[in-house]
Figure (cartoon, each protein chain N blue to C red):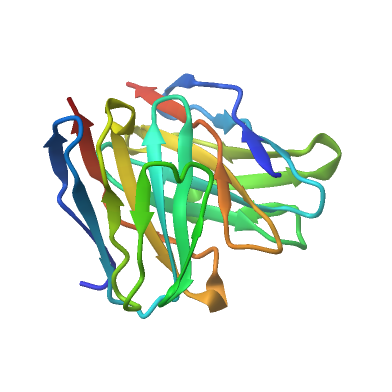
Amino acid sequence: NAGVTQTPKFQVLKTGQSMTLQCAQDMNHEYMSWYRQDPGMGLRLIHYSVGAGITDQGEVPNGYNVSRSTTEDFPLRLLSAAPSQTSVYFCASSSLSDVYGYTFGSGTRLTVV
Amino acid sequence: AQSVTQPDIHITVSEGASLELRCNYSYGATPYLFWYVQSPGQGLQLLLKYFSGDTLVQGIKGFEAEFKRSQSSFNLRKPSVHWSDAAEYFCAVGSSNDYKLSFGAGTTVTVRA
């Protein structure tokens, strides 16, 4: 099925551990982004990319790294997890011809203890 | 920078009654405005969007929204609510010169029988 696939769906990390949240889309979308969702704060943009090899920071980039080596994949890396990074993470993609026609993944629920 | 305020954190409505969710935005130019719905455990789904033209916008699932520039508002309405409309609703604003969306904190809708 076409869409945005996020893995894993759930993850528990210990403080200081590292991990990568995976995001893949099969719609040949140029634009991809990562958001975190926290209660009472809506979704906040972490990083985004307008194409392979191009990434930029969003509203809350600290503690996160991204890369975009292919059109399909946009992984989000937590280098040293902190309890403040406990959140639900969403990946979204869109075509530059319909840049606001976002398709969202189903999310990754991350708990840092 | 653009921003969105959703004044109501939680709304309870009876099935069959009308629903109105408030959204106020801040943006210097003509905004791109969106309403998304998120069912429990799911990603976000676009209900409707406004770019320009007719200020009354029709969306999916029987929802509509009205853009009022004088009030900086983009309120969402539905004439008759169904139990399946219980969800969290997010208003978002995008700028005309980048691809970023800024989301409000969300309004949770509970539907009682």
